[in-house]
View 1 (cartoon, rainbow, N blue to C red):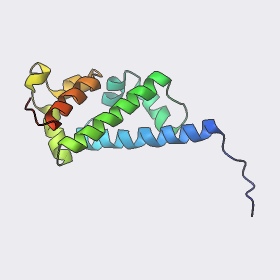
View 2 (cartoon, rainbow, N blue to C red):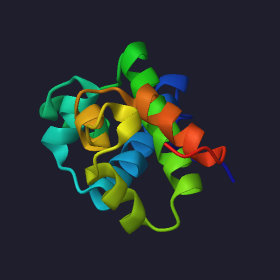
View 3 (cartoon, helix red, strand yellow):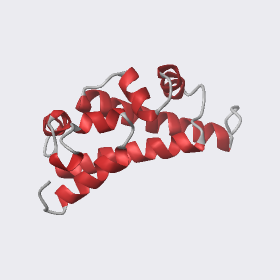
Length: 130
């Protein structure tokens, strides 16, 4: 039996995947980090409206923003490896960390330095104390 629906184009499939990826990471950030759409937009260096358009699948992120989304996914992954519970992650995000010059991880997150946070978490995961 054949479908009357035309096959999806590569672009449509890519848009669905990106929408799903943004949605999963967005929900994780909201639930685990306790941030909102504006905070996420600030960290991604885009407008809150852009985040909303990505979530609805109305627009596709530019390649540089797809890289940011992937880095946020990497951050989510390493948080899951280092911390036992989402509450542990949220607590760490709000504590001052010596390896971050005494700033909170949330400070670095909001300014989009996810690579710096990933580096600190990788050090913690390796067994070194930071």
